[in-house]
Length: 323
Image (tube, rainbow, N blue to C red):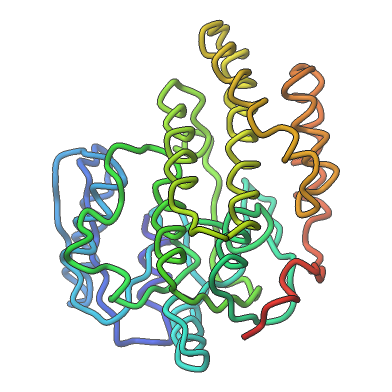
C-alpha cells in the first residue's frame, strides 16, 4: 500500500487529487492512507463498509473532482511519468481514453506485457476487438486515463456491483461501443503485481460471474461490428473452458457439466479466429479435453513467460487502423 501511494505522490504531473477508498479493510491500510492524507492535502480518504471493488470504484468516481480519472490498485504501483504521458497522449490525439503498456510482476520476476511498438489511435469495431485480446491494453482500468465525460451522472453506477469479475472490461467495452476513441502506446508505465490471494486468481464459485459479464458484453457489440462480435464469442467460450478447468479442480460436477456445454457454444469460431494464436487454441483444446495436461502446460507457459517475455514485438493486429 505505501509503495502504491508513494508512486502516486512522486508523479511528475502534479496537479492531481487521489481519492483513497477504504472498503472495510481489516489490515493496516487505513492507517497508511491516513498518514498520506495528513502529509499531502492532495490525498483524500473515504471509508465504507466492505462492499466490493465495483462499489469502491463507484464511490471514488463520485467523489472525484477532476477532468480526468485514473485508477490504481493498492498492490500495484506506477512509473513517475505515467500520468504526465497518459495526459499528453490524450491532448495529442483528441482521444477520450489513453492506455499504456505495463509490467507484470510475480515475486522477484517481472516481464513487459507488450506486443506493439507503435502508438495508435483506435475506435469502433477494431478498438473493441483489441480490448478483448490478451496481449494488448485489455479491459484493465489501471493502465488507462479516462476523460470525465466517460462517467456521465446518468450512467451511475458506472461499474456493475453484481459482477465480481470483468466489471472493468464491461465498462470499457460499453464506452468504446458508444464511440469513445482510445490512444494506445506500448510504453510500460504501470506495475501490475500478482498476488496469490488476488481476485484475479480466485477459483471459488464467485468466479462464475465472468460468464455473466461475457454475456453482457455480447449484448453491447454494435450492429455490424463483426470483428469484435467474433472476439466476444471466442472469449465467452474461452472463459467457460477456464471455468470448467477450475471446477474440475474443485470436483464440482454440476459446474463442470454446465461450463463444458457453454465452452462448446462458440468453439468453432474460436478455432477459426486468426487473431487467436496457436498456443491459445491449443490450451483451449486441452482445458476442454485434457485438463491434467493443460495444468502442466499452463505452469510451464507462465514460468517461461517470466524468463523470456520481455521482448517487444510488432503484431499486425494494430496496423490496420491508425486514425
